[in-house]
Amino acid sequence: DIVLAQSPGTLSLSPGERATLSCRASQSVSSAYLAWYQQKPGQAPRLLIYGASNRATGIPDRFSGSGSGTDFTLTISRLESEDFAVYYCQQYGGSPRTFGQGTKVEIK
Amino acid sequence: EVQVVQSGAEVKKPGESLRISCKASGYKFTNYWIGWVRQMPGKALEWMGIIYPGDSDTRYSPSFQGQVTFSVDQSITTAYLQWNSLKASDTAIYYCARQMSFTGSYGYFDYWGQGTLVTVSS
Image (cartoon, rainbow over all chains, first blue to last red; front, side):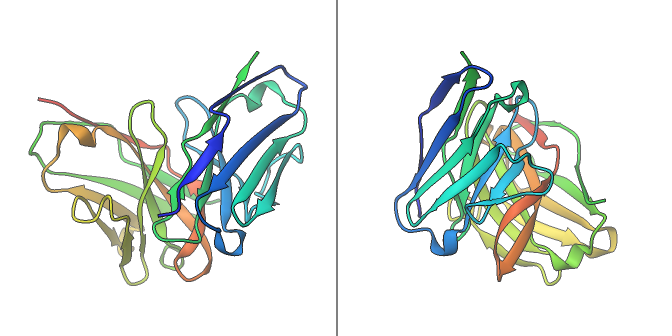
């Protein structure tokens, strides 16, 4: 299985700051088949990024994804109040597909 | 408009059987894989597997193979997740989601259901 290690576990930031979330895979993720999801308490996950760097429909441009191979990054350029949530990466290029353990972005 | 709506919360006893549902609408049901994801209390998301409604082809994660069964009813555009004998450790929220695929069975989840809470307790 491809293991995805997300870091940090928790990120404490203030609104307006930049958030940088990391997702490192135990082996190369083929064709950059890497997605990012946002989950708020009591809600279902929401797709943010697919193909490592493509924003999903309706996602603000303050969210950006980058990376290839085994190292991927989700960047939120300027945090807004609604961005405080848990973020998961998922690889969908290997079997089974796997999720990371999540990074919580909390208000400092 | 694409919608994915799941059945309501369930409370069951260990050893009982259960089937939860996932109703999809707003797109051609038979053309997109449907996936299932588990989230145990306070834990991360876990990929359980996917089913293709067009021909009921399935891919199970090894962690869930033999523990659950996926099925679909094309006539009512609904997917199902079934257990034959529940355990306390099955207590979790279960999400279904539509998978957008570009290559075979590989894809990401673009539309999610609201989740079904399953509680298994004696």
